Image (cartoon, rainbow, N blue to C red; front, side, top):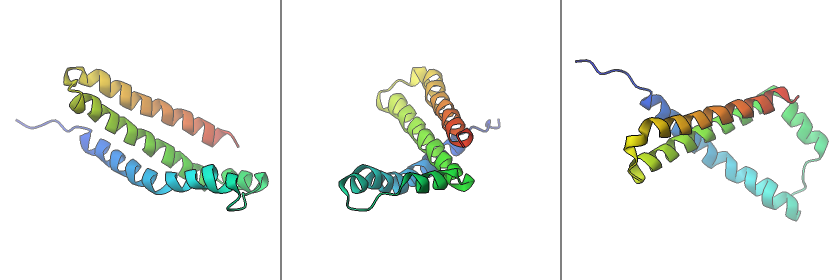
Length: 118
């Protein structure tokens, strides 16, 4: 009897890509915009510079990729926490729908905001 293919390998790929990208970029962005610029350690970019940066399509696609992958990283981790950590395997379909549906909805909102704002 042949096994049906599942989405599990693809979801693990999104999980690992989201974890790596989030671990590399989010701490740097938080440090710059949350600590270094407000405390004056580094001169902050002016509004025109940030607007020009975010106006470039490649920058928007990179930010969208970061948002999407971080959301799917969260969804996969939260699903496994609820299913295996809290032993709620009997609600697996509802948990999966909530987690991955939330990641898809958040990705759609991020895509709308990032790609249609300029």
